[in-house]
Image 1 (tube, helix red, strand yellow):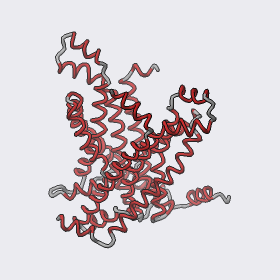
Image 2 (cartoon, rainbow over the protein chains, first blue to last red):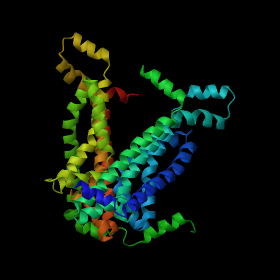
Image 3 (cartoon, each protein chain N blue to C red):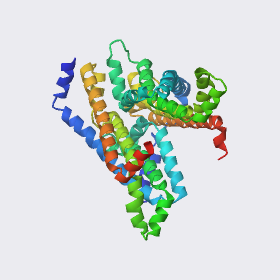
Image 4 (tube, rainbow over the protein chains, first blue to last red):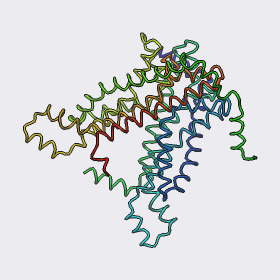
Amino acid sequence: MLFEILEVYARPDFPEKLREHVVLSLAALLVAIAIALPVALLIRNTPLGAAIAINIGNVGRAVPSLAILALALPLFGIGFGSALVALTALAIPPILINASTGLREVNRDIIDAARGMGLSGGQILSRIQLPIAAPVIFAGVRTSAVQTVASATLATFIGGGGLGDLIVEGYSSRGPEILLAGAISVAILAIITEVGFGALERAFTPNGLKIAQSRGKR
Amino acid sequence: MSNPVLLLLQDVLEEPQLIDWEWIRENFTEDIVPAFQGHIFLSFVSVAIALVIALPIGVISARYRKVYPPVTAVTGVLYSIPSLALFAILISIPGVKIGPSPVIIALVAYSLLILIRNTVAGIDSVPPETIDAARGMGLTNRQILFRVELPLALPIIVAGVRIATVTIIGIATIGAYINGGGLGALIFDGINRQFPTMIITGAVLATALAITADLLLLGLERYLRPWARRT
């Protein structure tokens, strides 16, 4: 069985499926960041903004990913673009909610101190709020990335391609080796995403915060 | 009317086939209600089984700290496997047939991380003075667990049940692909037949079910935490 699975990975279309999966996930994630971050910055000082972000987050959590992808079918048709729109919609809520709360929960005293030192609003944002909120924002990006890689598996149902194609092919042709080859590659890709973004999250944590965190633990 | 969003909305609303109310009326008792009930069954059974497994593991992890990191590592890896992949792996195991059982196994696996983490967090949240006081009153370790720690941890455990339930209701839709039944069956049928009404019915009902479960469990959480209601 192991040999047969490896044979599937040697198929000429495997790199293509893998590439589709990564491109689809990455594109959705980048578009979602490009939408969610500016929105979080715009609403960071308004209570209404906080309520909006939290509600989008809650509703986003309740709508099944399959539902979003399937609904894209009658709205945008079959194919990669349709899947990209659906995956972007799924990727936005975790980033938006984390960026919004992260920016909001920067200690008021620190901001007051910065203002007292003569920093402008823009300087406070770029030198104080963003660095301090960075780990929380990045945690949102990580959640979103893992979720997007997982949901991209479902893109196959609306003709979006990706590694889900192998699972569907294996399931409908009763080819257990193709089914398993698809499933294992998707699982490994998801775990790599989780671990990789975890490392990036640590890299994005300012050294000052790391010291504060390790002191807190002691 | 040159706004592309407005044009799209107009298209959508004028599309006669998007929601075929006639179909919904005709298939309500035969297709829609059983799918809805099946979905509730799948989600409820999975979370119940997951609780039975997660509670003892959570209690043990809270007591013996060395157990906790490997437990989170294993359940964390399970949690990050995409559901369609996990379903595919499960049905590849000899003896596991397609149907509700592999779906329930996968849904239980996904709930474990959240439930165990919240059980440990709940027990950790009990102040040490409270436990000292209970010990001073002569309670045994077992009595402290059942009469002090678990009741005080309950709101946080219920918060975990809430997150797990909402997650499970969403993932359960994908289980229909391996004949698990539920509302996902309507969505997949709708995709295969190119019939948006079925997709929308399944999607809307699954979302409504998740939101309802979320609100009900939030109510339970608040009820169990009367001291937090005043603030």
